[in-house]
Amino acid sequence: MSFDLVLFGGTGDLAWRKLMPALFQAFRHGSLPPDGRIVGVARDDLSDDQYRELIQSRFSAVEGAKRPSPEEFKKFASMLHYLRMDLSKPDDYARLADLLKQRDAKTVVMYVATAPALFTQVVEQIAAAGLNGPRTRIVLEKPLGHDLASNRAINSAVGKVLEEKQVFRIDHYLGKPSVQNLFAMRFGNALFEPIWRREHIANIQITIAEDLGVEKRGAFYDQTGALRDMVQNHALQLLCAIGMEPPINSHADAIRDEKLKVLRALKPWTPETLGLHTVRGQYTAGTAYGERVQGYRDEPGVSPDSRTETFVALRTEIANWRWAGVPFYIRTGKRLASRDARIEVNFRPTPHAIYRAPAGNVNKLVINLQPKDGLELHMLAQAQDNRQRTNGNQSTAAQLAPVQLDLDFDKRFGSERVGAYERLLLDVIDGRLNLFVRSDEQEEAWRWVEPLLDSWESDGGPRPYAAGTWGPSASSAMIARDGFSWGEEQ
Image 1 (tube, rainbow, N blue to C red):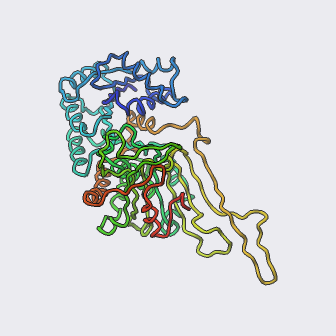
Image 2 (cartoon, rainbow, N blue to C red):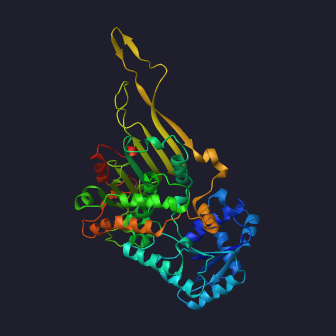
Image 3 (cartoon, rainbow, N blue to C red):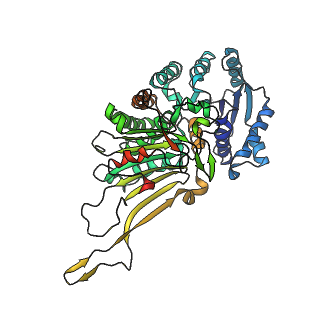
């Protein structure tokens, strides 16, 4: 199948860090259609060969096993081309149209990896150049807007020139193998679904923790913050995957219809819950990797009096029959104690104890997302030499001990694993929308988080927390009010 993939922002950070390595892996695996062309677009004055040399030099930063050999890159590089463009000039889009007409590929993918402020302009210019035909698909990176109004404006502009089935709003968390296995675990097996409800589950915790700071993204991050960067998209998409009802089939709209129902069922914020059930923080100087690191306000590009949050913890509920009364906790932040993304499903205790068991919550399912990828089932078992003893009419209950069943997907499926961006890029080329976000989903997510953004405009600012910790202590206090604790505190 012939395709042209036009990468707006072709020399940018996302292009060489994520997209080009993913495209190369697809090429290496033989899953990238051979009759394809990848066209990098940027303002730099480069020839095709200079662009290929630039991308090859960037591959030195890719982890060893994913780096191409010189021979591999030479073959891959034959697909790479470059076009210098000023995205504000209509004449440059006309030049792009001429370049694409030379091949008349079956599919044309426009990947807009630029600043979100340029999305509307790029889409409108693509249409003005006649590049919005039925063979065109456009990929939009997050964040898609800064609030509900700007998100609606982008979706409206896109909707005027392209059909919804041509728009791929990407959230790379949905492409992670671990998230794919979350869907498979729920809807491909009969084991968990009967107990996947309020009668058996005490609480669910979603943690997306990063041990790095903002690195070189200080200026961007200071205008964004953790709520917009991680909660509105990644965390809420994970919550949907956990909380949604089984779809009628595996088609894109069937899945997205069920996710939308979850977003619409999230309890709305009130002045009371905004105060009790949300915590935001900002990291100060501390220790990471055994070394002293600076605080957020000292990072390059960050305002010295910034009120931007680098940590968010919140509590919510899904108001429907399956989940009524079950708290869902979301936590994400930078410069935390470790890099760890996971979902913990904590089950209720047995209704009547006949054994002696350790205190605390011991029955839980942990879905590891990164850096580990797999499932852990925590339960209780009795050791062989720890039997129930009878003394006359008295009996001493056996002591149970926690045990763990651990399934490591990387070990089990190692060489067969496909990375998130690799999977998603191939899905775009093939026209599969299952793992992409529909406009009404996105708007509903913005609608739900917007009261938090509004309330933070006039509050006392984010709580400080030392780099290398698990965030402000108020996060632990929030969950403790329900009688629970975060996974690392159990």
